[in-house]
Image (cartoon, rainbow, N blue to C red; front, side, top):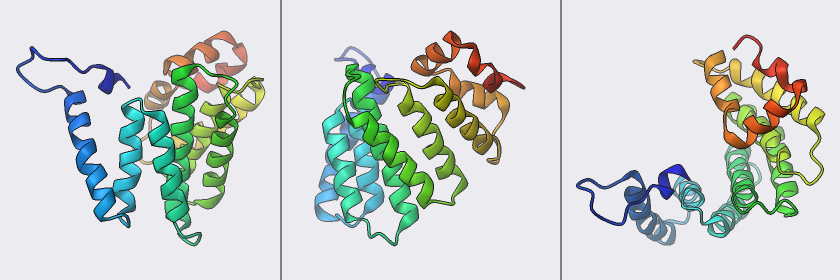
Amino acid sequence: WDLSLGMEMGGLSQPTGADFLYRMIPAMQQLEKIRPQDFENRLHLGNAYRWNVDQLMAISTHESLLKDIPPQRTAVRARVLNELAWSRIAKVAWNRTFNDTGILQAYKEAEEAFRLTDTPVDRFVASYTMAYSLLFMPQRDNQKLLERLTEAKALYLALPGATPVSWKYLLNHESLKIVLDADPIFKPLLEGV
């Protein structure tokens, strides 16, 4: 969002990151038409829509892709489920529509992704996604949020190159940070950082 919202309407000598984002979408859309079997392009196209704050296109692109992934391709399905969940979260977070049932669906999709994959990074992403979706639940359960973030922390710190400092960075996103700072129950998440 920071990238797409930074677009300038002229007067700059160099294109901005947002300019490149907007320019790549038509090419990715064309590639989706001529090579629908290119799952990676379709996955990234959904992400580009999300970054462009086009939540409905992001959701529909990821939903369509999920339908086309054979059930036996569990690793790919897990990645798509995680991205679909993030697209739903983005819609709720951006529009601040906290009664949107899509947030419940996002949690379920991330939960399914967690069950489907044994890839460490995808398990972390699924766990973190479940935790993040809990921020926007109509009846937020801070204990459940703590459990999910504790799980995500353990999975994250087991990844090659992960550090406590980078974990802290993941907790500093505005929406998450506000909730974590407001309740002392979350203090253990910052231990060792």
